[in-house]
Length: 302
Image (tube, rainbow, N blue to C red; front, side, top):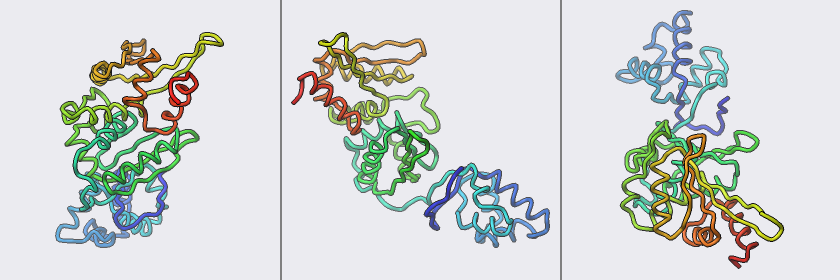
């Protein structure tokens, strides 16, 4: 259930148009209010075209102000938490400008994170991970680059989520970087990254690897220890592009398609793993420290 905490007048609620429509009709049919025009005034949605505005909020799901929902809860005698059962939270579009409007390595990195672990919706972005400290870092990066507050919460025992409720930022990643909303099918590397400099490309790859990469270590016997870096997703285009960039940086690897239809990159040789560590690496604290400690155990780093 959606929980409403620390809200203010700028908060908008999405995903509950059917519930609001049902309550509005109940109020009119019961005689508590005369019509939608009167209900608009009661809910504080009055204006030159208040009836049309209420119709838009009911039918088009463009975001209902929390103040209106609180009044609706009071006059209908329905628990606000029930109304918000399937809700999503957002905010009125901010007039602020980005802290750093120039496209840079950090925005390229965040594009990789969103493409892998993120969920780009119409009015907000969600990014999930099993480690809170990884998302705390991502949260700080978003604030540094865009200057907007980011919420972080725990959703299950081993899963955390950050939410960026800004239509401005959603449009930036959707319109400028061409990251698709609502789906992860047929993803492509943004042109601004394909034509960017080496640092931009490496930052984008690091974002993908933080999101979808993993580190594997295993022992053939008591003496021989191996470290491998794995990366797998469904999108062949992304895998092929990352593979080409790895080869340009002399990071040898294998590419194959598994039984589940996933495309996998595996960096297996010590020389290539070390080169990956020095050239690309990880930003997420858990993965960064794990790779360092494994390479240190092999005597490859100090």
